[in-house]
Structure formats: structure tokens, C-alpha cells
Image (cartoon, rainbow, N blue to C red; front, side, top):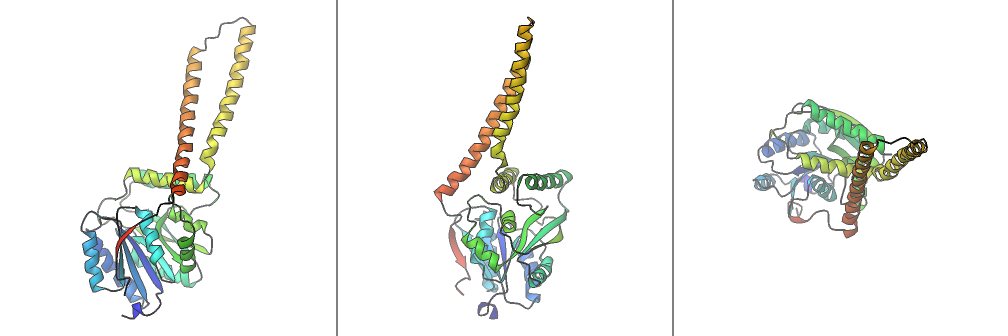
Length: 316
């Protein structure tokens, strides 16, 4: 096909993990949209070592469509690593990252490419609503972005998702720089700078009916985001130390005054509460420092972000 001989105008990077239930539906929807644009394109599926039949379905699709490329990981490296692997191998002038669970609607791609043609290097896709998400999850997401924007010098678009477009210029920067082992990619693309804009979209119900992102993974991603964009947690030790130092000074003055006046100080309960609270905060701050040290340790080791087991259709 001509797509293999001419320069690709668009690369669509799709992370896949146990999506056999909706993979063909997603591909048909995506292919219908990008093929109608009459441009040279490639679709890069990154299989994060799915345990279901996703890889075989991808190979069936790739055998019939040579614009489809497959990167198959040697083990599960995580969603962020999968997106970065796709970016590393993308050749398009515009690179679009999205998930394969149909919560990132392919129908938004023409509008994203239009923004790129207007000169924007980064197009952040912001969710206005998610039909399968309850009130508490929406509130948690909103509070997370408000919190991280309050402690970070880099302001992130609220409700930004892993559905975004970057230019090849930004793509090359991500390939060369920003190679952290602990990363928050949707934040990094905003940290890189360049001309940015946002588009809103409504996420439909998840085709597979359940999320592959467990609560533990979400908590880990949140800590990764906070540690990547803010050093404020490391300052908590100083802040709490000053607060408790001031409280201790008041307690010392009060105790000496009562002693000089010859009065008994019934402060046993107060003292125990004070010491317990202080010990708890000390352990919490020590834990935060330990978390940053773990991330530093990961960076110092310099291990690869991912390993590829096999690739398909890149040789064509």
C-alpha cells in the first residue's frame, strides 16, 4: 500500500491489556475513521503482555491490514511504558495516544488533527463526563487534579486523560529526554512546553464493563504524578517540625509557669496524645522521604523502561 512508501501523516498509538472483548470493535471503529481521512497513517498496537487472546486477535488484524503494527512486550511493564514504546516507534507527523477500551472515542481524531494543522504541538483531551463512572470516582479525579495543581509549579489540565496528540517535534523530545522510570505521561507532555490546546470529549461506557486499572494501580499512579511534579511532600518534615516545635514551646512555658505557681499539672493525657500525634507524623514524613528514595533508586539503576518480545509489520 502507499502508506508504507510515503511519509505517515499520523501515527495512532494504542495500549492493549486484556482487551479481547472489544479489540475488534475498537479496530473497526478506528480504521473507519482514519481511513476516511485520506492520509498516510499507521496504527501501532502495544500489547502489554495480555493474558487473554488479545495478541492473537492483533496478529489476525495485522495480517489483513499492513498499516497495523504490533509491539509485543516480554512481560507486563504497565500502561505508561506501553504508550512510551508506541511513541518511540511512531513515525507520523502527528502522534495520537489512546486506549483500546472505546472510552477514547476515535470520532475525535479528525478534530485533533485539525488542531495540529492549526499549529498546535500538544492537544490534551479533557473528559467532560464518563457514563460508567460514579459520583465518588469523578469527585476523586477532580480533587486529585486540584491537589496536584496546588502543589506543583506545572499546572495540568483538569480531567486530562491518556488520550492526547503530540507533534513529531514533541515525540522526539520524549524519545530523547524525559526517560524517567517513574513517570506521569499526561503531565510530561504539558511540562515539555510548546503550543498547547485542549478539546473536550465525553467518554462512553466501557465496552468491557470493567476497568483494568485496579485501585492499587491508581494509587501508585497518583504517587508517581505527585513525586514527578512536586517536591512539597519532602518539605512536610520541616513544616510539621516547626508546628510541633512551636506547640512544644508553648507547653514548656505553660508547664514552668504552673510549676512556679506551685500547682499540679494534670497533663498526662495531653502529653500522651501530643507524643502519639508527633510520632505518627514523623513516621508519615519518613515514609514520604522513603518513597522519593525508592524513585531515586529506580532512576540510578537505569533499567530499561520496557523490553520487546516481538514486533509485527514494522519491517514492511
